[in-house]
Each structure stands twice: as C-alpha cells, then as structure tokens.
Amino acid sequence: AQTVTQSQPEMSVQEAETVTLSCTYDTSESDYYLFWYKQPPSRQMILVIRQEAYKQQNATENRFSVNFQKAAKSFSLKISDSQLGDAAMYFCACKMNTGNQFYFGTGTSLTVIP
Amino acid sequence: SAVISQKPSRDICQRGTSLTIQCQVDSQVTMMFWYRQQPGQSLTLIATANQGSEATYESGFVIDKFPISRPNLTFSTLTVSNMSPEDSSIYLCSVGGGLIWETQYFGPGTRLLVL
Image (cartoon, rainbow over all chains, first blue to last red):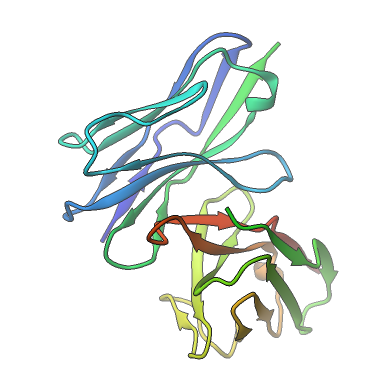
C-alpha cells in the first residue's frame, strides 16, 4: 500500500523568510504524481504544485518549489519570501499512474509570523 | 481547473437523521470523488463516483451509510445516513483534472456537526 508521511505537524516561519516542509512517501510503482495542497483555515483546499515522477527537473510555481528526490522517496516543499497568506495546513499527496486514488499525508500546519 | 460548489456549506444535525450533500461542477467530468476530513486530520477517500455506474467504496465505507448518486457528468450527491456524532467532519467532493486526470480539484467542503 502507498503511504505518505509528513513528519512535521507544525512549522513556523518569519514573514519574508524561507521555509521547507518535508514529505516522504512509499510506493513500489515507478510512475506516479506528487502534489502539495494548501488548506487555509475554513477555506477551500487548493493545489499548490505538482510533480511528475518521470521528470527529473524540480517543479516550481512562483515562490513555491519542490525538492524531489526519487531514490529517497522524498518530496519537500520550499516556500520563499513567506507571506502572511501562506499560513495554512499543507498536505502532501501521491497518486499512482494506475488507479485514481490519492494518498494524503497528515498535514503540516504552517504559521507565518509577522 | 474546474469550479466546484457544494451545498450546504455547513449544517448542524441531530443524531439519527440524514443529510444529503450536493456537489456541482462547471464542466463535464468523468470521475468525482468524495472525501471525509475529520477534525484535525487528513483526508480519507470515501468513494469514487462515475456517471452511469455504481460508486466504488473504500474500505470502511458502505453504501448503506454513504449512498451516492451521480445522475450526470456535472453533479453528484453524498448522503450521510443515520448520523452519529462520529460523523462530524468536513465532507469534500473533488474531480479529476489535468491532461490525463492526474490532478484533483476540490470543492469548498461541507462542515457537518452532529449533536
């Protein structure tokens, strides 16, 4: 079975600083997708960034980037120039190319300190 | 990405009653998913709903408790039946997106409190 582990239940970062959220996963398949989702308090879950496992290049979306280490099965999210609006619960997720189910981690609650 | 709406956004219900949650998408989608997010926890997939076929339920979830309808390609409902306080959760619908449906986009969720 696929599992996704987020070992940091809570993180905090000073505004304008950089923070990295950790995620590891376990799968025996070689073709899959990895995601980071953001869920602000009482608001909708939105997709932050996506990585295809077959791509070696790390995905980036503006201030958000990932460090994808396929051999280590690690998929961390780096948020640069943190803003107050980045405060949210962040979920790491994995989806195999075969099948439709997403596997979510337990989430990391990010606090941004003004 | 798809625009997804859910009704109701929140509700407070008495135990033993049932609540039907609606999910509407602004485009036709093949696959819709229903998740439960219990307080302070991650998302758990309840079932996958394809139009024209029976929903596929994950382990621990049964049709009698969570009946699902999928009458067309833009709409689905999830009913939480015979509710108990343990059913208090956020219920989210999502749809597959992307070139090969590899990404999921989520609705705003329905916050349910069962007294």
